[in-house]
Image (cartoon, rainbow, N blue to C red):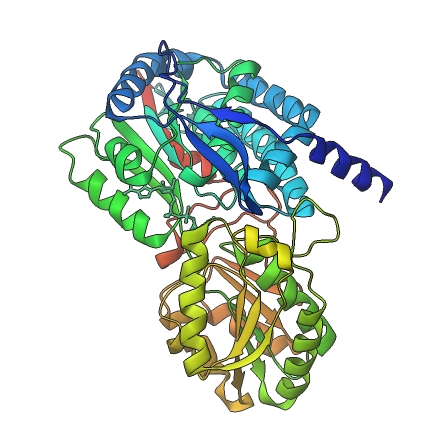
Length: 496
Ligand code: NAD
């Protein structure tokens, strides 16, 4: 606790102002900037950002294309050592990075601490995997007299496009994977979190990644993102964000008269937790609260729907309302805060509209009270509704709203069918002490990550690789042993 208090003090001493600019080899900042404000208090200016334009996209890609072969020819161990050095430096400067995550992304302190740890884990994990996979060519068995070798190499220039909800961990995860595999990278952060992306790229440059091998283009999706993904020089895109944007990127890549690009997409979800009457109500409520409201519900893994078996539904719903009344919404920089703001006014408005529809069509279980100071930030009060079926939700609700659906014991198969029918396949929680029920659900639900008798958020790099299928993403899983392969090309050498 003492350590946490000290860290909180250190974090709160960092208040900016921070500055983000494009980082393009050989180009100086232009000086045209816009202000960045704190989601928890929009009156507080925490920095400025200078966005890239189409001319910079072109320059960044030209420099990256020229630099990539040299980076690819470095021994994998040298690239890995640079990433490991960056992880050390990230930990050394962690108070500043945590502060940035709190102030720019509205992350609560525990979330921001976890985010920095996860970012360092990604750097080290992909360094280790690069040594293992790219270190030596693989000798393949073949006819006597011939030698057959399989080499892994970088594909070329990878564009990394990331979301604001894990502005450091996902950003550095994508970028470090692409670099580890021998690609040059042009990174575009989400427009809401350009300061964090800038600090992350500076960290990698300071650790030894050459400026032309990794370039940084803050800017919005429609201009910078779209210009990058329609460019024929791009060999691959690592994208994390909404399913709709993944479709747009897929279309842009497909329309190019250019080499077929690799697309690694990690997208949205419509995640459920299923609880049967053998589960402990206390545990269901504790885990669903963490899964639905931590990070203000702005996690792709978050539980949006709790299917609760009708025998225990009244009890669970009343305990849920009681537990929600204890949630503290407020300044994410305070250790006493459970739920911080949502990322911006657009995100808040989507939630307000959804809640207005739920107020008309569903039964409200609870709504958390907002403190008076919330009026200065982009806050949205966490709430829960009872709805008749999953069909009521037509799209991913990206915020602190939980929906509860009651089910009958005879309807387990229908519950799983409803979940599969959403077309998404990201996370699923199961609360049950009956092995057959757990086995049935786990083997019939088409989801990437299934969690039993625990919350369904928080993947551990290298231990619980994360990622969905179908509308939720292409795979392979981030933080898993196969992820780097998607960033690699393969060549064979046969010598008689
Ligand atoms: P978003 O799709 O709006 O934006 C993501 C990124 O794409 C941003 O950098 C944006 O500028 C860029 N972009 C937008 N339009 C583009 C275009 N036409 N061409 C190229 N780039 C474009 O998503 P968001 O609001 O930043 O993030 C929230 C979403 O991300 C949610 O759907 C969430 O579920 C998902 N997400 C998924 C995972 C996962 O691992 N599956 C993890 C985190 C977030």
